Figure (cartoon, rainbow, N blue to C red):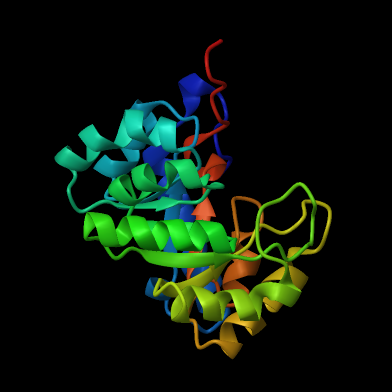
Amino acid sequence: MDIAENDADVNVADNLRTVRAQIAAAAKAARRAPDEVTLVAVGKVQPVERVEAALEEGQRVFGENRIQEAQGKWPALKQKYPDVALHLIGPLQTNKAADAVALFDVIETVDRPKLARVLAGEMKKQGRSLECFVQVNTGEEEQKAGVLPSEADAFIESCRDEHGLNVTGLMCIPPVDEEPALHFALLREIARRHGLEKLSMGMSGDYETAIEFGATHVRVGTAIFGERQKPAG
């Protein structure tokens, strides 16, 4: 089935069913159970109507990149669908940490000591203990967030031991022009060294490969919702 990209033609329910079937098939091919893989539906710059269509289809795990956009969309939706789990999958500035801790359930982009320290303080202040993933810049790209692979071991340990964060997994975004499997394998190895069971890796174009390499969370937006909608202005 072709994923519709035209706004008028996007059928979120059909797309969601297709993605779920592909996840199940990829898991089976990797000799894994389909329920070992959590689909994180990425609602970045998508109309709330499309997000609600996914909610109506039973999707309950969502990812957002921007705090301000999520604040305008999710408080009302969470009231209507209280069992939603919301993942922050975009870069987080320390001055937005309080807002992130208040709204999100999982922070996937912990990537520097100052942010780890501020998040720990905010969680204590708000009485929340959110799951955290450490973002690893596996491609060592200057323009991309994430701790460098050579610094990941020490950073993961400091997040846990020094700051007391509930680090349960790792996240990466491979370079667009490189074979993603190499990056997925690297992330899996770093996670193995620390006994971390969760791996957030794989997006619309490569989530089946990510599942082969052990992804427990795949972040899929376009394949579900169609092309992102450009903000007005």
